[in-house]
Picture (cartoon, rainbow, N blue to C red):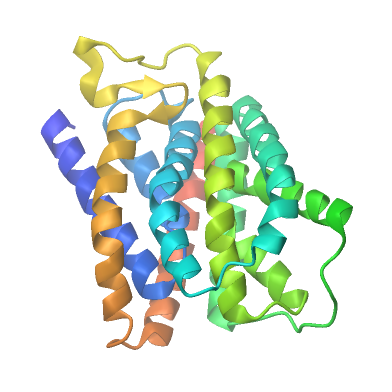
Length: 278
């Protein structure tokens, strides 16, 4: 794949994932990781690293997209900072550790883990299950532990944690709009620590094309592919508000079912990637 075709495809991918995130209110990581894996493979990057780079780059995009989402939710008073503060330290620890675990896992295991996570998430979307609220939030120590789990799993699958944190908060009697807003605030520490962790893990690997004048289209810092990060983040930040506006005019419930079916197809692709890597 030529550099021009590669960057063009990244911009289209960023636009699609940003629009989908705004339209359906879900993070783009589950879309980004499989498509980034395809594009990085087509670009000829090392096969033993493409899944790691796709996960790392997907997570890094959240650094950009979470800020605008957080500001919007906070303006409506939907962010529970009393929940963010005790969760954030655990999230930072979990995200750093999760990135190191991901960096040490072989491609097959990492692709399989992602496929299972996406399949589970797609099933939750199709069934539209929401946990019944029946308890209060745990104390500070409990929230630190929960944050560690959220951060660790989010780093492993290149996601912002909303599919874990929102159900947890609903289960603990947090109102839906506050759970979503608080989850948006948690996306930044997940992305920051996870990105740092993937940079550190990637620096230990060989075969990754580091930044130089001759590797601009494939310039990477650790496992973070910089051209993919910048192109996807720029396009997604532009198209996410368009998707949010479209959500008020379209049947988002029906679209979410279509999105779930697409996730099953992408999970199948990642399973095939895992099988080929064995």
